Image 1: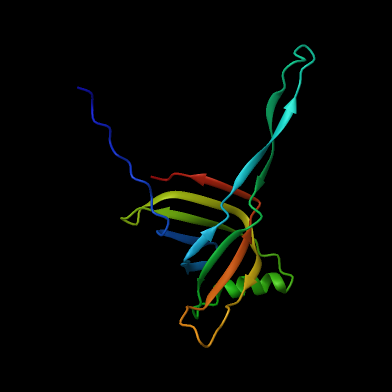
Image 2: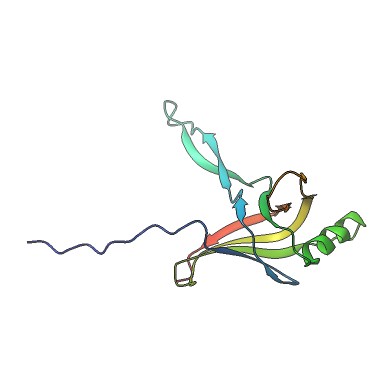
Length: 149
């Protein structure tokens, strides 16, 4: 009889937090755009004319990471974007951290030299019960992923 494999359950997508330099706490209901890809580069050597080799090319990162949350009276994100609107270069290092059920860090996406490229206010409707949401889009020069556990 063989050994029994340890079962590893998938992490849930609702247990995450956002961190940024200069922002004490920012909770969001949605996060998307944590993407990175590497262009393939075809390369052929003269002595091997039948086959192309695939080399790694430029690294590209998501055009933006999109974060959505209910409006609060916390002005930290709006102030960060106000700096950018006023021509102040305000790049910050940020992270999106996925946690397990015990609130322990499991996966960490680091956004290096990030800044808010778009700030979107709430859509409002007097006949609705919905929470007023604000949306920010953040661009970063580099996105890296690590597993801190």
